[in-house]
Amino acid sequence: MLSIAEIANSLQQWLMATFSPGWATLIEFVLVGTLVLSFFAFLGLVLVFMERKVSAYMQLRVGPNRVGFRGTAQTLADTIKLVVKEGLTPDGADKFLFNFAPFLVLITSMLLMAPIAFAKDFQIWDINIGVLYISAVSSISVIGVLMAGWSSNNKYSLLGAMRSGAQIVSYELSAGLAIMSVVILVGSLSLNDIIASQQNGWWIFKGHIPVIISFVIYIIAVTAETNRAPFDLAEAESELTAGFHTEYSGMKFALFFLAEYVNIFIVCAIGATLFLGGWMPLHIGSWEGFNHIMDFIPSSVWFMGKTFFLIFVIMWFRWTFPRLRIDQLLNLEWKYLLPISLFNLLLVTFIALMGWHF
Amino acid sequence: MSFLTNYFSTIYTSVRSLLKGMWKTGYYFTHHKEIITQNYPENRDSLNLPERFRGEVVMTHNEENEHRCTGCTACELACPNGTIKIVTKFDITPEGKKKKALDTFVYHLELCTMCNLCVEACPTGAIKMDQAFEHSVYDRRLLTKKLNRPDSKLMEGVE
Image 1 (cartoon, rainbow over the protein chains, first blue to last red):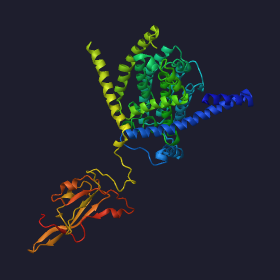
Image 2 (tube, rainbow over the protein chains, first blue to last red):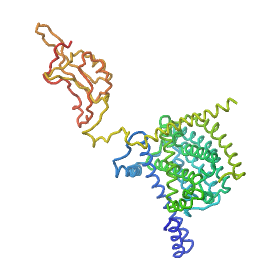
Image 3 (cartoon, chains in turn yellow, blue):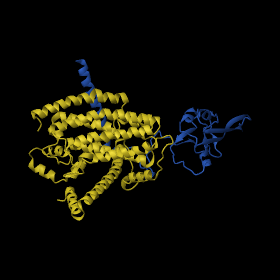
Image 4 (tube, rainbow over the protein chains, first blue to last red):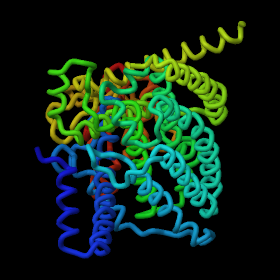
């Protein structure tokens, strides 16, 4: 069976055979960069369309249905509009920071793509501290947001950026603790080891109630970290126009918009990797026949299916729940999520020590 | 201990209410038959407008080309943005008396916000809201309408 990993391997061998090792590596760099960028564009198009359709059906509307087949070309048309538009820089803005901020946010998302395993043996960078790398790098994006808010020279932008900063810094804690519970059970920070440990069942099934609790906490925390409703205080339209990207227009706005959706994809991919087994097919204990049938579905399909399911859940949150106030937001984190996840971590550690998980 | 029970009951009730909301939106997401928006230009012939939809003000006339407007200008006074202008004239009654009557009911559709206050103010029920909504024209003057039909008279017995 032809798999993505085999294609990548044969390409690698061909490059190594044709060029000198240095050139082959350089060509691979360029190829991977191009692939990541085109994947970003693809994600932007698909996720925005998905978001609009999901929101429409949840609000008893039809959603975009004019451009292309059943509206599928709508986001493409929007993208062309954004590319053609003028990218305005306000007079009072700090020009360098203002123009740099959207790229910083996008570069952070690009960096986060590196350790994600998209399919069996298909990964940009296999490092043994993948989980640590992700939780460390993902907090850089707050600098981009603060930069954008500060340099815009606009009160709404600044307020939105400060809120976003408070929010990301506090929710990072419970997201990190939720990730920790799986790391404790596996005993490794490598994403590949984590996926391999779910050969006989995903952690959400194997780890009893504590892992389910940390999964729920993880989903809540990353919804807050990606600044999405019900935690979208940073860009609360009714209070702050658009928050930190009030002053941005054209392609620079589009980069922020793209980074938001790519970040959703990344956090959902990590959630799927940690709790739902990444590319690992659904295996149930010792049901040989069932496991064998599940193995026939390609691993990339499993990974994408799980990730998009989680993305759907986060969209579901957005179009159901009302926005929190800033005090409610911080209450939720410091009074509820953090104590619960700390206690939960203790429980998971106990389970791991006693070997009570499957 | 009571703060602990409070703490956990808060978590329980909030999670329960959030799940309730998600159940509702999930139900809507999976039941496309309940969609209330309509594909307008395609279904122009079978458009299903709600009963209370307000498109423009019209004056009702019966078969003998008679309306119920006495020209009292109650609607003109009630209108918040000067949409209605009533021009009156003096009719001579059979007894030889002069009597105020409606000459022209001028209606500026481009100013109207469909607030329904004129219809509520009318003491004789001469005007009502119609559901026609395709009003776009290329010339602004076409939106200034005369609501009473030519040669129409006041209905017998309406004071």
